[in-house]
Image (tube, rainbow, N blue to C red; front, side, top):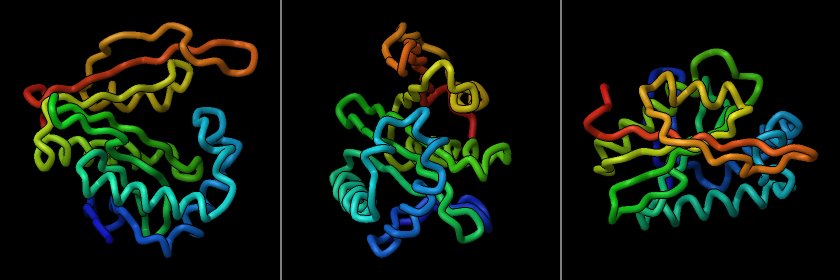
Length: 181
């Protein structure tokens, strides 16, 4: 299965085939130190087989409408993961998660990927509410929902342990009636 949403001539969101596993793994492996700071799964991702299994899981969840999680490609290179890590069809809610290779930060690419995911969620999935959770210390990550018009619903205080300290999780949401394309 290949599913693609074109954002522009250079940027797209896709669910790739398992043949792309090695290429996606290399992006993660190359940026392991940067990603590890915010993402617990990075150290458990030790081979292209882990990515292959992830792609298979993404396809299965996409087909069951339980998730719509994509990889992003920019100028033909894999750069990120973004999309709905969970969808609650009963309540018409979805949660967006994302990461971006440090090589591509500061270009507005993730903002465009998240904006496209929001549009897909409201228009194609018929969602009423979209949520983004991010750690309070990850300033770049939490700037995206703010930039895209999300409302800060609340803070889960000290709910994430990092080495010797605790970090808060910020919970942002956007309702379909608040979304401006």
